[in-house]
Length: 464
Image 1 (spheres, rainbow, N blue to C red):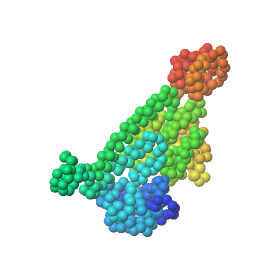
Image 2: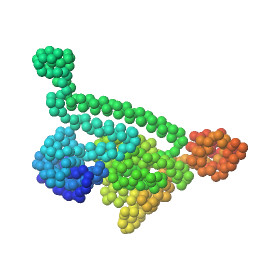
Image 3: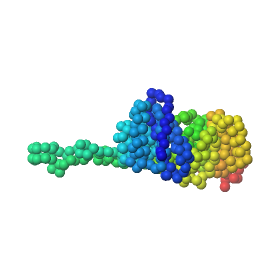
Image 4: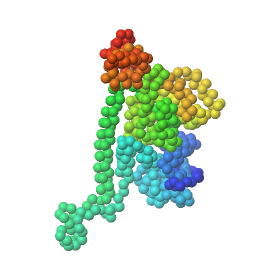
């Protein structure tokens, strides 16, 4: 028999919402106890999502069923309980932890007389709130329109737009349906008009997204003209990626406990212990049961993952279920086709562990040596130096070469890149030239064609 439990929460001045979680044992093919545990974890995550969207969670309800009800998901009897609970807490909004079909959503709204949204619609709302770039905003709008299209409902001919005047008489003729020739009749229903407008808007958005993608592709080509390795941070939402990104790059990226606070990618250059410079990209956090249609809203940030030379998989080690969350991240990485990239596990937030747990974890990692994960705290900075060394070791080899150069002062761009990408050991001005000894990565030396500026004493390695 299905069970339903209610938990009450503190209130605030935000929009009041009742959250409903449902798990069906038959679909998951697992014991009811385990199904219930996983379902409650998902519901707790929905609470954080709702708060990130600005909702005030007044109560949560949870049900374990043998199977989903095709018409109402939870069954007619449970809908009465949900309605009573929403009325008791004065919650005009009900959020379901799962994806509702258009029919289920309509039936639940009619039975509860409340506005109803599902997990996908909630995530889209958070995306719309946090998207800052032009492409991010377009991608979110596109996902929202595609989600809305099958959920449009009409009300028959009462919402029809007549093609001409109706009734007796008139210039179009006598009797019913008089009007201009060829446009008599019920005309286009409002439902059809809405669908046509959405499809037209979808086409325009897709064209706009393609234009933005071409622009970003050109910028990436310009960036790749000076070959720099790219390191992408990925992980479950709220794993502390932005805090770690700030610790690595000394940047001031928004850090928030709200889910999906980072949607648009942020890229910064950092210098590794070998003196190589690399680009680090902070990406959006992943989440379980993310519909494939929403992956397009990640496109800008996911392209940085696909271009990365090394992927840092960041985990919140203080979360007791971090292994399960890491599996969800691995699923998305598999869908992106980046399983062949070097990947470094980073266990973040070790400052939140008890001394005993931290000591046990450090002993376990030490036994694995270089093949094990890296323990860090993005907040305190502990382990950052070790992480930089591990990134340095994981990146494709790009050896440094010492060169003696004689560069015309007019070559300002080349001079600036040698200073930025390498390390200048000595420099002096002679006539209209800059004489310098510098350590430069081989890839940079080839890209800038430094061999044409070499002076006596230049390393032979760079000339090959």
